[in-house]
Image (cartoon, rainbow, N blue to C red):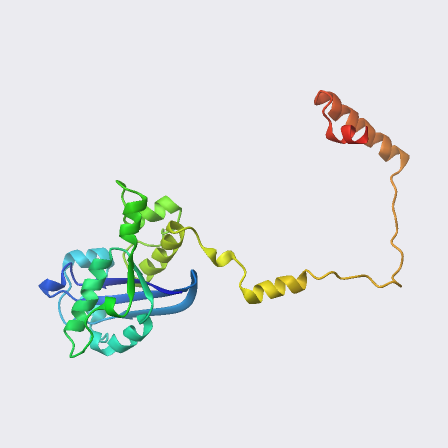
Length: 237
């Protein structure tokens, strides 16, 4: 199963007010194992970023001045997510912005949900933790995920953190299980290695009388302290 953990940063809160996407970050997960495959891009929105948005993500108009437009990355982005299951925190926000961006292009593409299924981790969290805070930061604290390096929001960083949160929230990471190749290697390493018949005989080192007497005294002390419940003394009887 191929899943894509996705996050965006934008110029503001509502695409209906003309706000645009300025960053997309995607992390690939296959069979609940995070891979090294990433999609990450900054985008020139051809408009000013709201001051409130800059305070959240720290991305400035000057930083985006020489970045590609959405139309320049649209095909690569679609190719990356197509056929996958999108994992998004507060999915209507990100999906709404993505659909809005495509609506501005001369494209037959209509909606993300025509090519991908979408899982909203905010809805999952609210069902799992009703009446509690379920922001990404709150979920990190709840599941013991280190996000101390997250001073500001960032699409790729937030997608990576959300991947960890999603795995914890849905039962933990199963990537600790051996895959087929690892299983074969483990099986091969567990084969019995028999020693050759002509090997030298092993040297047996026996206890000296003094060592045996010291051992018996130790057992007597343990038996006395434990009220006659010394395990080794009981086995010897």
